[in-house]
Length: 355
DNA sequence: AAGACTCACAACCGCTGCTAG
DNA sequence: TCTAGCAGCGGTTGTGAGTCT
Image (cartoon, rainbow, N blue to C red; front, side, top):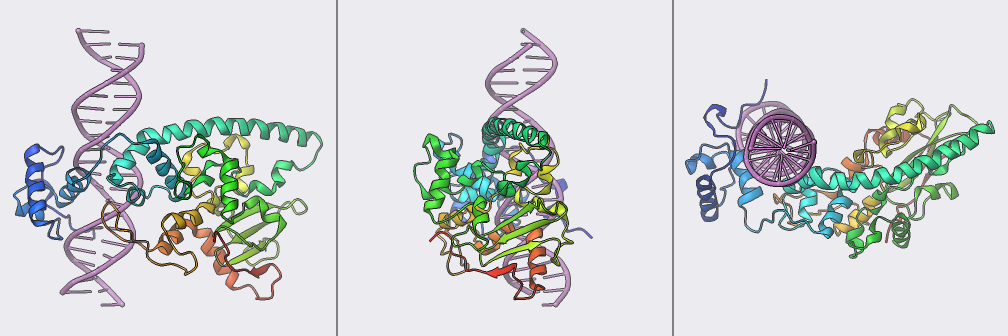
């Protein structure tokens, strides 16, 4: 049983709005507000339009102080950073850009920014791929497990600009041409008190770890086993698939962090699409918290800052959980609950992320 | 000059989450 | 607790303008 349609489809006008319709809608809303009911609004003012259509027209076009086109370099950077951090949450992104609507940003991203960024990505990855090929060739000649396959850093696509997430908020100089320079971003994050996945080898327990980090590494001694490391906001866990109750976890899920076993299956398939970069690095979430002025120590709170294009609020924790706790993580966490507390591979640590 | 193609943007569609009854 | 109705969101489509061949 489907939901009843919000309006009589046969009797509503579709397509572009006429100036008369715009004027009617604008005049009414400016005088009376929406009355909290978009569905009833078109009837009140004699418009043969769907309520949803009226809402969209108002929010995206008629509302005061709407800016169209002419995105600045700074806005570009903010959009890119946030997209790489949180994905296509256009309303959230729009909330950071006064006068911009989610629809506008979405269109701008799809038509221009994505291409701009992909061009940059492809260049960088082509160079990286060439390096990896060389290394693989060298390693295979000596009948050894390729170094690249055992690399501690394979937990992530190593040098993604996504690390740059939230940088505009932490560093106003987003117009800096080095904005995408990974080294400078790295050092900035380190200054913020964080560290990177390739530091994991030094210590299983984080002192300053960005909130969530699910990674998989192959084991050279036991080629058919793998280990999964979780550095969440409140715990650091390492599980070996050969001896953990979590060994049944579907390997396909490992890709949640943008890497995992699939990465080994043919470097030809080295990801080039932007959406594969999104969520690939959870480090930025901490930065994003700062970006939204969240208190990272109180475990949540409201991040309503009143700037959303549609005025809604959302809980940061809800958003983060939807971003950073994909299925693998929740499955792992379920498994972890069944682990004995004295399991040497399970250790608690407090989240001491960016202070 | 005209048809083909591409791009940018407005608008629509369908799903999800929230909330009042 | 359940359900219906609504607002809001994100993906997709339609269309007009601009560019290329």
